[in-house]
Length: 120
Image 1: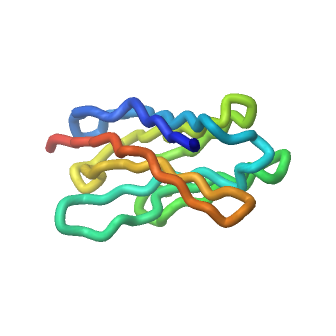
Image 2 (image 1 turned 120 degrees about the vertical axis):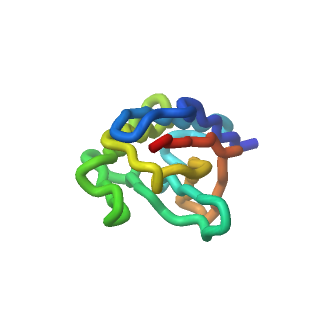
């Protein structure tokens, strides 16, 4: 059974930094197409924050415009993990952050979510 375990959320002040991590288990590395971070703020729809492909040697990262230049997604293929380094955090970054994995076979898996709160 595929599981995604997130860690690293918490409370941080405006302008601070946090690093989120997500480790996948129950699936082989070669079966992973991409991993990503989504977030959902209260009363809002879940949105894609950053994604990273796993199928190429270099990997391709994408970001939502609101986090470009502040967030960086990293991958560790051997560990089947992705991390999200979040710098210059703003109150509007407050949300529950979810790890997502897409497999080569079209399946999608989600983590349980980790809350991030940025105080002003």
